[in-house]
Amino acid sequence: MKLNVLTLPGDGIGIEVTTEAVKVLKHIAGLYGHELSLNEGLLGGIAIHKTGNPFPDETRELALHADATLMGAVGLPEFDNAPPDKRPERGLLGIRKTLEVYANLRPVRSYKALLDSSPLKNHLADGVDMIIVRELTGGLYYGTPRGISGSGAEERAVNSMVYTRPEIERVTHMAFQLARKRRKKVTSVDKSNVLENSQLWRRVVTEVAREYPDVTLDHLLVDNCAMQLVLNPKRFDVVLTENLFGDILSDEGAVLAGSIGMLPSASIGSQRPSGAWVGLYEPVHGSAPDIAGQNKANPLGAIGSVAAMLEYSFGLMEEANAVNRAMEEVLNSGRVTADLKPAGAPATTAEVGDAICATLVRPVTA
Ligand code: IPM
Ligand code: MG
Image (cartoon, protein in one colour):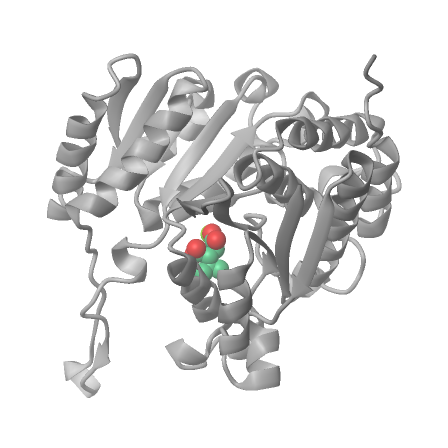
């Protein structure tokens, strides 16, 4: 198969974790005989430095022509006070919207080897296996009107939480289709006791659910959901929610797995005539400028994102499973970065990538 992939390493540790993810992608393509066509582009702070724009036109073109895009991370502290359209994060919002990748899938599962790294007691964390489906191209992140106006006592700021019925329907279908391949349970999260936006969300989700009688649906208010995630995380299978709630809950979910450095994510939207899903793959963690360039960031979120790319964009389940198994083996062997290793000598970012490649061998079939 031809794998047409764009990489956008971005800022901070994005660069070093993407290097390891690409190493693993090349290795697996070689093992299974896939033709890999790789392009690299600029996004985020590095793109502002080189072109003045966090999402340059050349990057837009490259992304529109790739089947899948692998992103590292964006964000640099020097832009903290920059105007909104000159911030690295704008680049990320721009590419998500351009590719119309409206469903962001963030799987959270516990690994036996990492139970002691979870802030939860082992019996609560052990066996957690959920996927957060976060709506990614609507809500407060994109709604208008928005902006800051006036001055002095008259200064005010506005953001708008906007969802249309079709936007809710399409992401709900995605969540229910995923649930069918899992434990068949969707929990929709909203704030319908206060927000009209959430009232529409709940009504539309309930209507769509009627098309999936084999899947159970329940609703949780977002504050309660934040609590249930630490009280009883095993109750969740597929968590469906809007953009900002999903952003917040997925960071909370991430630490259940031991470290935010572990979490991959897949954002998908439309399907190409070839059958490939246009997708944007990125670890959930940020650019962590405090540890950037030191070869100590955990690359497993980025490497897990490669597994997600193989699965969702290219339908290569065997290859995806091989990467996931290699990750588990490397975790069990203790060759992990400092975030997962409170005692003993940690592995470097590059050593973890090498260990995954060394573990990845094609199973011999008769
Ligand atoms: C995420 C990040 C982004 C978001 C930021 C960097 C814009 O926190 O992917 O979770 O809020 O979506
Ligand atoms: Mg976030």
